[in-house]
Structure formats: structure tokens, C-alpha cells
Length: 79
Image (cartoon, rainbow, N blue to C red):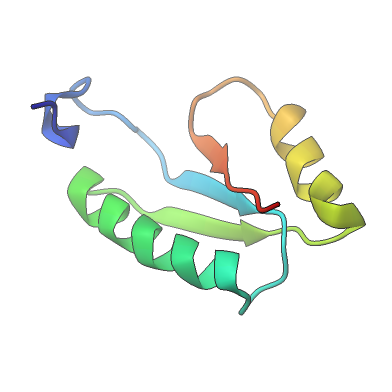
């Protein structure tokens, strides 16, 4: 079984940014906050939640797509 501790030593070196392309307080936001809080504990790193609602999720998704490829950003979506 693979665990987070098996990953690269010292990764990530800076806080993670998790983009949610919906409004704060909604179902995706609440679920992501619960999961990201646990992930942050396992990694020993802060996870910043970034809500970017609008345009049916396009604004948040586009933000992630245009980000530098540092592997410290992720997103969730709904359908």
C-alpha cells in the first residue's frame, strides 16, 4: 500500500492551493475542506482553499489551467 509518507521527501515545499470552481459554503466547498484538512495533516503542510465561482466553473478551471506547472495546485469540479 502506498501512503503519503512514501512520496518525495520534503514535498511539497510550500502550501498547496486547492481551487474550487464554486461558491463558498456549498456542497463541493464543504467536502473539499474536510478532505483538504486531512491531507494537510498527512503532508504536514497548509492547504489553501481558493473558491473561484462563476461561468459554470470556467473561471476556477481556467485559473488552474493557466497556472505555472509547479504541482502545488489542484481543483475539484461538479457536474
